[in-house]
Image 1 (cartoon, rainbow, N blue to C red):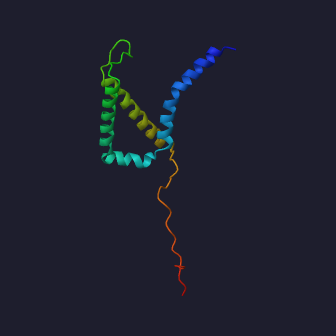
Image 2 (tube, rainbow, N blue to C red):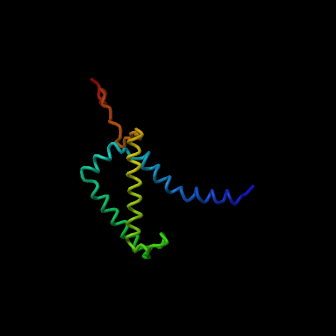
Length: 125
């Protein structure tokens, strides 16, 4: 039995785990039937602003260019912006996929249940 194969397979699965969790959240934790209209009415603007802020902060935390393509060096901030944009694009793709497959996550009410007012108000008639 070749344990190096299992080790490599384990490393691959471990590296894919964050992507799987990301997709699971956007597929099962977000009701895209309600999210698409909100984004269309203008919520896309804060999303873009958050993308820019995230890429800016990331570029200050890790200020180095990316030589990940091998033939092209991507400057600082641009590769972080590309990575953040890719994550947002993957989330939007999950929303599209949820609509195509007809999935809708279960509604969870965060509001407390209404208090029932009976005829017994603590006094007798």
